[in-house]
Length: 543
Image (cartoon, rainbow, N blue to C red; front, side, top):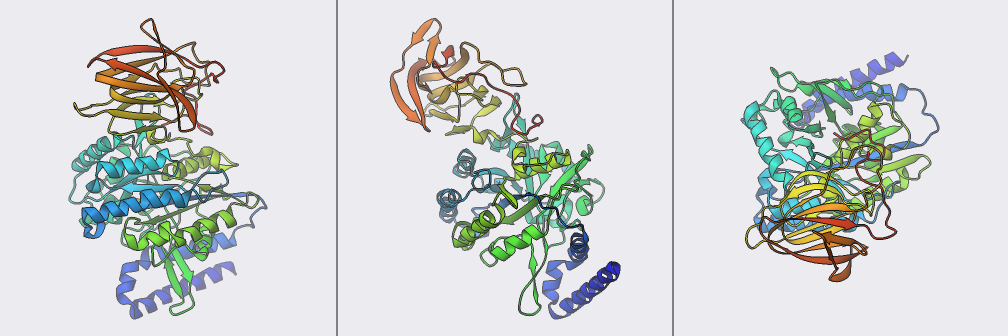
């Protein structure tokens, strides 16, 4: 009987497709029903025919990705800057009004393209991670490329962004990883006029991309894998290798050539007037904001890792910069969406809500693949470590070779970074935790020794910091009560203040250009000791 019902539904769907093509030919060609409608119906039938769910708490992982292009639609520089300012001022105020089951605010993943690069944009977006509100990822428009030219373009962009801590995963050494959204949805040459590279999945993986977040799409690029977290193997001789793939499945580790694609909901939703349905493509816009009905529909699609049905992944997208979308993303429409998520899916009994960046969503999916269960929020940093932008704030570009944040207030971070300053420039660095909270002035480099990897280690009696000067004055801001010894001379603090809620003291120094000064820093009495470079919570080692 169930097979007959499914057959009738598929027949009705085909008939509906024909009718829709006759009545709305242009719209029908645009929506590419032939790629996704029948797979969606089959999947919905499979969901409804499955065994009843157990009475247990489910985890909802909500990820919002943004094709963030301040200069889109021919905007002037002044208009683009005003668009950017609307986000840097409006989004933190909005996000801090809401929290998930872990107490974290909504996480917005800004997929930022290099053709709109300005230092003020990238440093401003990096500040979102420092504030705990989102992360920066890569959005790339390109056309007419070869594998070699695409790789060169990616490496150039990654190097540019690295100077701001973006895509730089904490560790010793630093590793470069990123998530990707293709411009014009043309991944892997699926729309040749906007790509040109048949082996794009391989090129992405080779340059550090851990997953693609491009889909869904209502264009020819849409895969036949509908509402899925899955892996595809690239065929360098053919375009659109991701058309079909293997669903991510608990207990089945990924193959060496399998590239992950994390897709959002696509399908049909009911409406009251003819043709009595609307298209759901997970795009949050002024015309189609995140209403309570849409939020519930996203959750009903039950996207997840096979064998872990209690972890539901919802990824939605937007083009957030244009002003016309701001109410849906920064105003009343956004408030409604986040309130629905928190009130209906964050009660802690039926659902645990987890706001996740693109990186965190991937990490949680990987943990599910490896067979983990329980509270999904424990696995945000499971495989791909957080970016430096979470722990280190700088007023200009820098080069980091290693960085592991201080795990206790009584230790230094493991770091090795350098800054290239002109004669007029001064550096300003701020650290989230540890003995060293900030440094400013004519700084050329900062180094501290590596710690052995593994569980938490006891802090040494004095931590060493090697400070390089660019010729001139500089200040170190250390936790109040630190003892500082420079080449046998005990330094005294010159001023006391507070920084990010911590009591600090300022030590003033002058170094000649090229001079390296080793400092022995003693933690204040009573500061927690033990430190350094262990696993992230829920982690299994960072990649």
